[in-house]
Length: 485
Image (cartoon, rainbow, N blue to C red):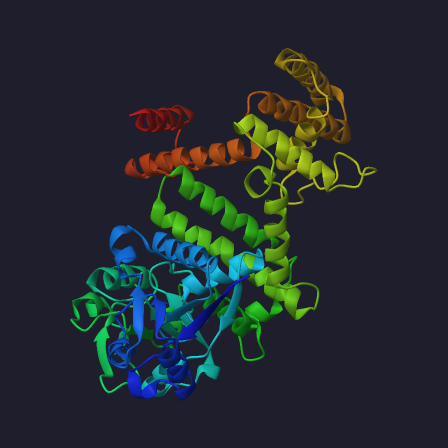
């Protein structure tokens, strides 16, 4: 099997080319090169080295993925006939996708590779910027990065920012996190005689003329926590600080038990924001729910029971297991198929001896618990064939409650009223109505209407107690008419 030898041309001009690489290139006389647009190429051509470049591949392909795949395919085809020399800018193993594709081919047994050195662009950039990478740095590809990749507390280097268009794309992504005035540095030809560093506010990134294939963008760390508030890590640090020795006394005293009521309150406030279709309120209320998640996770970590990573692992693995039609080989053509796959996956996770009611109890809501119980058993056939059975059961339980209300004890009244509510929940299930959601909606509706009644009473210089029954009924009806309007 023939060999593809990959040689790095270094990051700068001819004087920076390692002597060993220079001798190898001069001896071979001819090789493939990803692009002729490199400071070393012209000098080597004057030395008699002949290059076959792939510059034309860039022109005919719409995206970089197609470029890299065609280059790799061409080299693999050539290697079937003879040994091949392939030269790339910088170091072959730093930000060189064509080499990664060739390595994958080697793994599949399609070729043999030999990789020679070559200075990457990282060392001269570190020197030019006077930064120590041990502080934490990232190297990102400007053509494929997302804003989720950039860590605001680290030194971020972004390659492939070679023209105004690519700079504009990178700028728009960074502006999703970074302040528009955040100062970034455009580094061109680092370590060479043509080295240039230009500092600009982030919003001006795509207005700079000196952008080419030797350009790397440097985004310095953001120190101020308020300026990096869009980072998960920042929020976690804030919660850890609040719970820490020098933090907030209230936060330090909280337990999982004490936070239960706040979690319930925040969820209901979020549901209200959804009902009101208020995007700004949803953003705020989701943040409050997230606060409860992070606080509880921090308490778990402080007590040595679990960490936020454990929470993330549990839910991530669950989502992957229960979506084999997305992450595996299962097929789902519609929502019905998805529901069946979900239940099958869920059932496989449980102990065969476990009750159908296990994990259905909700301490914060008896309505939700009742709904969960009846939904769980109904899926396994413990239910009426249609809703008529549930209606008949409701009438039966209501009559029993009426009887106990007149002649029974307080205990029997509680028992029978519970049966009435239980059958109402079952009826709700048949009609696809979540009773907890319906109750939240009813409470919110009552609050709106009663506040209108209070307003009307005050307008007549009366309190609720001072108003007649007829007046209160009139106010209530006007509240209903107002809502209909």
